[in-house]
Length: 106
Length: 65
Image (cartoon, rainbow over all chains, first blue to last red; front, side, top):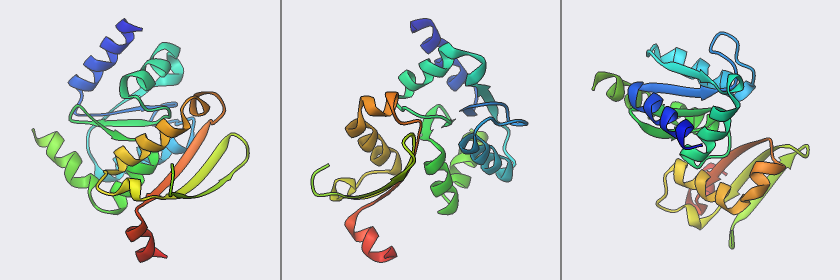
């Protein structure tokens, strides 16, 4: 488990915007993951995705890493932003755009 | 969560919850959801597949109601 947490930590550190999700951005395997992909696409930012269905250790490890029990999970600028509900609310309130832009600019 | 108002809709594994609580005062969305997950504990890992959350303070709830 420790190795997995290290891998996740470097993924989060090395990507300004990274989404841990079920499926790929082209073919999400869950409605909640699809929703967050759609939101990120609408902002036109570059982002990385990790398909947790391809790796059971990452799937379990990410929940441990963030102390968050569900997927998808969005990290921006090394910080955990939240799951689908939070992404939707931050997007609707207009807060998500600046968070993404600030992280990408740095 | 004492003093909270909770409305839950679900099919046994997928749930939607609207929670109004003064415990959310001064907390970010992330902290509010974390608080709910903490209260749910192991049920979240074992029985609940998906949970959609709306969290409001009593003041916020009064405004949107």
